[in-house]
Length: 161
Length: 161
DNA sequence: CATAATTGTTAGCCAAGGCTAAACTATTTG
DNA sequence: CAAATAGTTTAGCCTTGGCTAACAATTATG
Ligand SMILES: [Mn+2]
Ligand SMILES: [Mn+2]
Ligand SMILES: [Mn+2]
Ligand SMILES: [Mn+2]
Image (cartoon, rainbow over all chains, first blue to last red; front, top):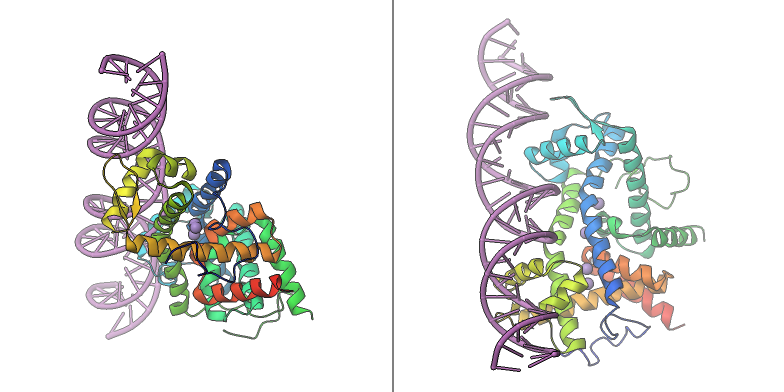
């Protein structure tokens, strides 16, 4: 299993992390930093997006539904809702269902739009719907606007042809 | 996936999270679960991959280099190395540089191969190299094997034409 | 070769995101 | 309408992944 053999014959197209020298330190740091930053907002975005979806499709967002859809305990959801509250993304009265603030709605919208682009892109690429949904749920938080608009272009090309 | 949807004029290509009913609970849970699982191994993979790269390009992997490339304190790296040790991925003697175990090398290889495919794919798609590197660093951990092999196919098509 | 600089480790702190168990509130139903 | 059920919150625990400060070891240098 050495790494300078022919084990990856097809990836010849250009620069690669394995074949190349390491990136300059500054850029390398920025890569990891960007990922760390994304991870700080990921879960929040997923919650807000889900709350928006529940309101839209079910009329209301209740903590129990969030818990069962996320596959997580109600206690976990309750704690998270307090955080979302402190962040000014939702409003909630005790034992009542949730509402998104203006800011929360904005975030839900942006997140859902991005999520949809990634999902549609994967499907346009030829990925099976089930897999595409799973991959999109994680990928969506790590896709730059530049990549997003290229994905959108790709979707448009694939679908109107 | 459900149908009966006439909203969303531009996203016509198929099912969308926003226009559609919510996914069945079981599948929805699996999406989030997959992301949570990925997040458990992400950092580990990045460390191991970086250690492999440092050994390959610099001859050795020292904690200080890891810290400066990851943009993180030496204490953080030291703590993480203990974990990698416990996981059987690296061997290390105090104040000495690091080595990957068999298992660590395997993980480094797999991670790097996957990372390369994602990076090459983004570049083949038309994403600027700098952006592609940043996006790939996060996306790589959320891409299924199915999607990976479709990406590889895409790369091949783009480059030999 | 003694000291300075660099590198690595340890201790102790913090926030996030999980969990279970127990208490509390609201809703449904006999 | 009282009791049972369902939903929500709180308390307290755990792990991960950051940090700073203090200390220890190694390596470089005058
Ligand atoms: Mn997501
Ligand atoms: Mn992620
Ligand atoms: Mn990587
Ligand atoms: Mn990565």
